[in-house]
Image 1: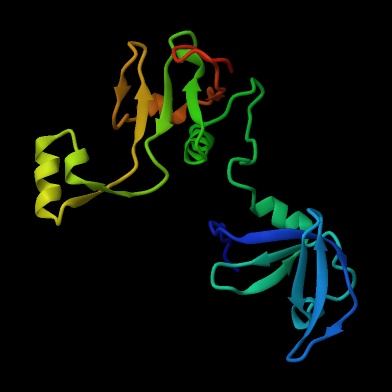
Image 2: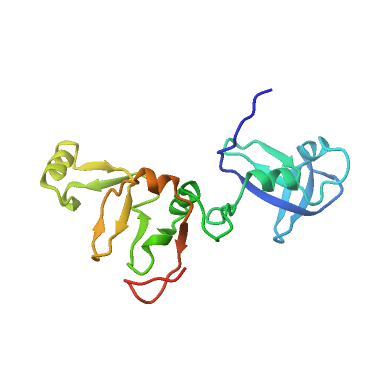
Length: 198
């Protein structure tokens, strides 16, 4: 067998309690109460696939509507809530560039340890591509392209940098040193636009 890595987004809830089978007009179902207190009607045949108790397992719904159960340890090892990425910290409390990218995608700002005190940080411009009208482009060439493209152009996300000089640099590029560094940290929000705490 080959080893696969998961990259899917799913809806899921951990099962706290489950009712006996309820006979509906068209199909049988069971009432699941989640650990968040939500009550969900689940087709009985989905739960019948498991032998033994299902409390503590996760009820998982995939993008195509398919539902299944997943044991807690397996689900929690492979999935996390957006913005709650699993910590892959090293002994100094920092992390590698891969975790920094995940943090950026989750809407966080990140900084390298060596940038402290300079007010520098990275941010993602947006969380996906956007349709931008021609009049909103700064570059006359981009605006002209958008006008010829029906008045709109697709803008892709980019990593931006808040520089030590107080500018926003569009399209920051990582050096080899940046990509191999393990001293990345998340920037916490503060009242000062030029300072931060870690």
